Amino acid sequence: MQSWFDLTGKTALVTGGGGVLGSAMAQALADHGARVVLLGRTREKLERAAQRIQARGGQTRWIQGDVTDAQSFRQALESIGDVHILVNAAGTILPEAMTGPGRSLFELSLEAMREVMDVNWMGTVIPSLLVARQFVARGGGVIINVASMSSFRPVTRNVAYSASKAALLNFTQWLAVHMAQHYSPGIRVNAIAPGFFLTEINRSLLVEPESGQLTARGQAIIAHTPMGRFGEPEELGGATVFLASDAARFITGIVIPVDGGHLAFSGV
Ligand SMILES: NC(=O)c1ccc[n+]([C@@H]2O[C@H](COP(=O)([O-])OP(=O)(O)OC[C@H]3O[C@@H](n4cnc5c(N)ncnc54)[C@H](O)[C@@H]3O)[C@@H](O)[C@H]2O)c1
Image (tube, rainbow, N blue to C red; front, side):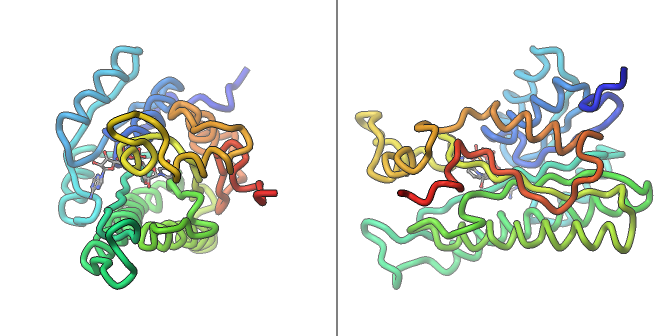
């Protein structure tokens, strides 16, 4: 019997593949037979993530590259060869681009805001367009973007991040339609919107460094998550494999929240 979720013979490129969520998504793809290439900036993190995947029997390698730099990404892609699945999981939060204690609206760093937009928005656009050339030539391929709860409604304090993730969701829908209408219905573009997961990107916002207790923001998140906890990175695996696989072959332009009910909850 054919397995809907078998990814044998496919190569998946995961940007931010040394990060917490990117590496968990990569692991799930490798568990289902894909060869996985982890791309990121930090060699040590990539190496560690690749070792974890190999230890579980996955086929993987890593490559250094910057998703905001088309030249760097193009070079990386040339050395990788054919890619069938692109997961755009690189992303950033910069404190200078957030309001909060010690930083009013008028003290936001415009440079930091631009950098957040660059990594989260252009850092998805650049890999997508460069990999899409291969997809068009082949008439098929899958892009999975990593959106956020702030794609739907902005979260407090994090102004540039929220705007970048809203743009990313809009781009997901735009590209899905464009690919199907102008190139091939075999090219699918979707997104996963994680709720709140404790990772390197947000740990200092959610947990007090000294005590390990949740910050007021961390407590507010748990209170607004009906399942009453943060997500575990491997819980993104199911949605990732589903969207990457033939099980989703008539699905394009959607976003799957993996959020413990956060998006559905009105707060009352
Ligand atoms: N943690 C959460 O609760 C949460 C919720 C929603 C969405 N997300 C998104 O998930 C994705 C992964 O984040 P994470 O939480 O695993 O954080 P993380 O910091 O562990 O991973 C992000 C990775 O992106 C890499 N990266 C940053 N800029 C890059 C660049 N220019 N080129 C290449 N790589 C770059 C970083 O080195 C890092 O390894 C991000 O897009 C983030 O916005 C996270």
